[in-house]
Amino acid sequence: MKRVAAVDLGASSGRVMVGVVGSSQLELTEINRFWNGPVTVGGTLYWDILHLYRSMLDGLRAAGPVDGIGIDSWAVDYGLLDASGRLLSNPMHYRDSRTDGVMDQVLAKVSTAELYGITGLQQLPFNTIYQLAAESGGLLRQASTLLMIPDLLGYWLTGQIGAERTNASTTQLYDVRARAWSELLAARVGVPLGLLPKLREPGDLVGTVLPETGLADGTPVVAVGSHDTASSVVAVPAGDERFAYISSGTWSLVGLELEQPVLTDEAREANFTNEGGVDGRIRFLRNVMGLWILQECQRVWEDDDLEGLLRDAAGAPAFAVLIDPDAPEFLAPGNMPARIDEHCRATGQEPPRSRGAAVRCVLESLALAYRRTLREAQTIADRPVDVLHVIGGGSQNELLCQLTADACGLPVLAGPVEASALGNVLVQARALGEPLPDLGAMRALVRSTHRLRRYEPQGKPADWDAAESRLFGAR
Ligand code: LFR
Image 1 (cartoon, rainbow, N blue to C red):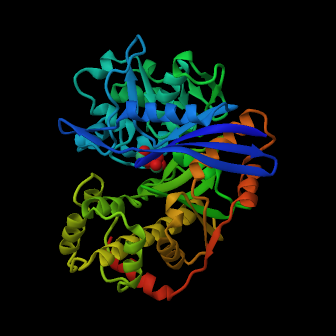
Image 2: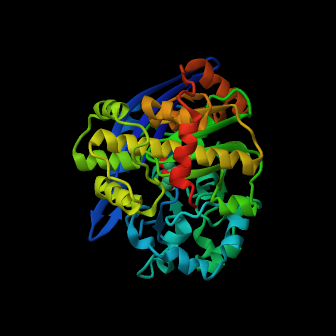
Image 3: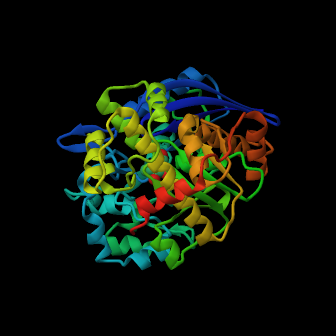
């Protein structure tokens, strides 16, 4: 049996959890939970990295002695260190507007087809490659090392430098077939290769904690699937290969787990990503905007009664208004209710008349985006699926789970909620000697220790067909 600590940082909150992992045991206890989000300074969106580090240390101290510590977080963002190992600038938030228009500048140096052929990555304006191209003030010239967020926090804990592979795979500077940094792309976009540290595998030892952390001397820090989505996919409680998943939180990551990347024109045109998973798997998925739109509505409404909003949404008329949740205007923080209204007017629809109607519009639109993404993923990867696993915080949203089952015409199995933290502790426990030979064994343990909720598809499939062609048909 192993007792390990998972630091799991999401875009709206971070947490430290202790996991006890044994042959028939998998239990998580939350030690602390802390705010995370963008902080605007001088018109730029930053993460509050020292607040995250301090809160994580508070949690780790409160956790007491553990056999290991693992860190996962959102992807694509990074800190730059100078030659003495000091952080050059506070890490910026991927939703900051400094990358506006930068993709086109980079695409003038490397074509979309070449970029996709090497990295297999979905084009998102905030991919690390575009953020680096947007760095100003000669920062890249002053920098010696680039560390992704979990690698940066791991460096502060241990003094050791490295780049965990699953998160490196989200930079769009990583060659998915060669399984190495792409020298060609780095050169083409002017990123010094020396900036990119040696790659680490999930399960590798990062180092042991430094005395200044105040943590128990000698505690190992273990690399996990440090991209939160990689960790959460580890904890998908699937029994065989014929499954799809939605890792549901601020983002909805919708797709399949594959053995090999799919780098075809079809996959590129449909903008699917091939991110690196634990044990060399590929996460073939697309980012759908996710619960972010609803979270931003709640922030603007100053309404934290999600239950109440969902009740109102359940009672609101079906398919009254539909939006494309992936429209670029929904990416940056801001007045989301007003943007929804504008989007409706621009597409010839009456804006929703109540909060309940707006929430219904967001959830139905998400369900339609899931449906389209899943169908495309199955066709492009030639992988039929029988069941859709919804994991992460969004798996608690009963209305969304039911709409998802209805829209996709598949049974939805919802749970576990804390999927990233579970994936994190499972990979650590294995690295520390717990007999969990492969993903199948880890998933069987999640299945036998966690209760899942099943949603059968209901309603009329024809209604969803009609709604889909209303929303996406003209494209
Ligand atoms: C989810 C996630 C997604 C990534 C996005 C930005 O938390 O990690 O996988 O595309 O955040 O980093």
